[in-house]
Image 1 (tube, helix red, strand yellow):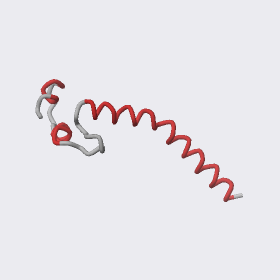
Image 2 (cartoon, rainbow, N blue to C red):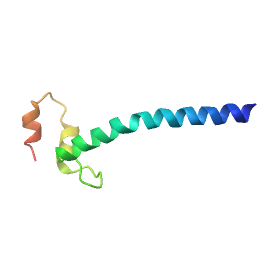
Image 3 (cartoon, rainbow, N blue to C red):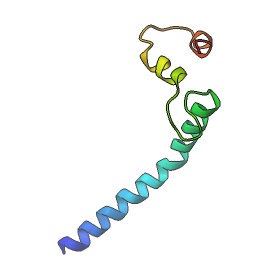
Length: 66
């Protein structure tokens, strides 16, 4: 009984994660197109700077920093 509940719970979590995968891939593609990350998904200097900016700068200014 407990094992079957555990198995069904694992499957439900797995399906839920698969539903989010296309959204995740889209976000990664946007970060790559803006050159915040490289092809290996490593955060580049431009991405680090964007993460550290704490004041509300206009988006074009952030994109032109690096």
